[in-house]
Image (cartoon, rainbow over all chains, first blue to last red):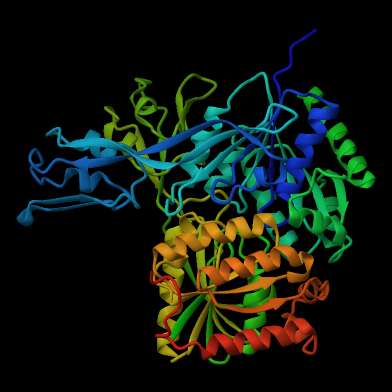
Length: 295
Length: 299
């Protein structure tokens, strides 16, 4: 039998609150039960990671502090030539010759390393500064959850997502990546090496507007994707018209149901799953499985 | 004049609907949509664009294959893993991964790399039926959304000063990363919109931690409070413990989505609904808070 590389599936949305986490957690559950138990869920919404809230007593498997490199300037060696300041595209370095002053603003630093290369006097050393944590959890099924959690106050979310992804890179696992909302760099980082992307939207004007810009992004990135309409029944039919006009595959619909909203709010997505939810996710998984064969 | 920034941590908690409701209630106001990543407020306020500005979000490296000698130095030094060999084995920059640090350009021994200005991002000054609005449109996958937020907030402040407006309502981004930090820095008050779910509460707490580190006054409202009364009560306790005034609780009502479909604020669509009444009370309470009132965050 020919060996197939296991799929990486990213779940993204543009608008927040459309149901990325609901879809990711359910997919993880149903894939582990009905397709492949070698599946891992990765929470890439490092600013606000929530996936772990939906598992019953998840046991911590591993916990790793991750760091960002921030330059430190040794004013004994520094000649205040300002070359590092000129090379820093992010305005993170201030040098004042008259005052023998050299300082780095860590909150602006992107850790690109340009200043270290620029310095001809060996005055710059890069020091590790905490960025966040990567935690592995046992979830009782599948291969567990890995979560990235950004330290409050850090603005380097994309860097943490990159480190999170490399920490779970394993071709023997099927991977589900739960993306942050939006369409900017952290989302791009999350979906960058995904084989297939599931966009979750809601049939409202806000949902549709943000779906459109996310579709644009995925077209730019040349990524295959399909759409799940969550909270179906609310709003209007415009999102369906958009999908049809643009030949975008509708993977499934999750009907709006106040009871479902209530279970979500309590973190009980995986307890007493309603039959219709099971049917929806079974169908979605069948459709995604076919993508793997096509690949 | 003061700026009120609406934030939630979690996406979909109702920030934009709250900002829109206030639009109907506020007088002499300027709007600023800080959610530059996935801006939605314009779908309700219908801004008529008066000025368009280009936002310089930095540069992206480009390698000239004619002069490149494939020495590998750029790929080795790029910390963002943005340079990969193409099908011909020559190095190529992935524009989505390049952060524009220009290190590769500076170290290339044969000057084969140039930086191309990125002009995919625009911001606008507009008029709406409720007052002036500053908003933006970012190209997909762009960097530096934090700097763009800083730029449009500066413009909103200028307009507000010019027009002697009493208040700027800033609709914030989700999360606690760079655009959220850029939204919080130097604002006068944060209105925390909390949804009564485990995730809503978890995210609001992280956001509060961020706002607290900036020492900015915080007030809160609970949206869709009747979806989970137990968690609503827990949020109440959390707010209480941290001396965050709870200004009101908005019930869940599908009319909110209907108003969105009609491109109206909830106050325009259904002025007599419980929701609209509650928004009226909350807006009044916000106005009663004096600028120097001692609100939390000072410990």
